[in-house]
Length: 346
Image: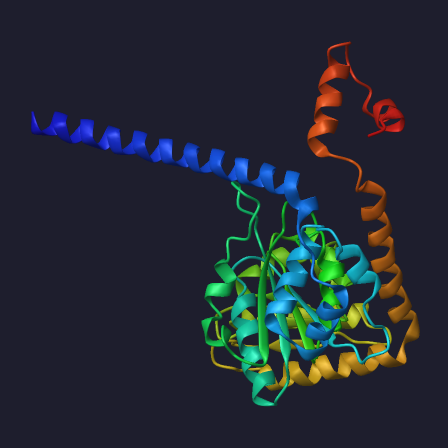
């Protein structure tokens, strides 16, 4: 009898949990739809005031401006077009690599090093999107609690929102906004999903690819993707077995790819600060390399403009409306997707 009551209670708890999940999903769906419907009526602060707040490094102004840009609120485009172009730009450092490589720990170590030297740093942590409301899960930010209230550090978690490159779809605009602020460095950490993260190479001045000794057997399969975008290799957790073999493998790969810049391969233990000084020097050296190789800077700028043009051309296309159109077309018979794409208009 007691077991029956226990099973019945367990079943009721599971049912209650499922109900709460469904209720939560419906709630966030409602909030998201209402937000989209009403966003055009948001009151936008004068852009002149926002620009002054950005120049002063006011964190509230920065946060509100990023939210405006990320959600394409009224006035955000005018703000972007009014951003100054005549001030020193912060160095943008992208950090990517497979899950579990210790990217967030490395970011934490870099923050300690730079803030100790009096540098100001902005950190963009691109988290996987929540399946309920497309918001960031905030997992990486939890690991950086030492810098929540640090006056020289601004940390912002962004949702990838399904972007295939492992980045937020407004990452170019958000980085441009942060460059209008008095930061010395802008760090971008991607979600760590694999080869699709090559987009970071078109945004960052310097891209760090972080790997661990256990990834040694995967290097061959990664060559055509993430491994091709590295400006600096970081072998984190290099005190583990197989580290020397991986370091040797990567150095051979870096030498094979070497042209004007030979990719440094750095052995690191981020939790202990090992290899950090060498990494900081390599980042500075790569920035000097960028400053003296105008073709690379032109390529990065062209890549950004290319992505902006793509976003602009696609802004009138709605995924759900496209799905409805495809469904209607299927009711008439099999759909040739190439003809459909050629003829479809929003």
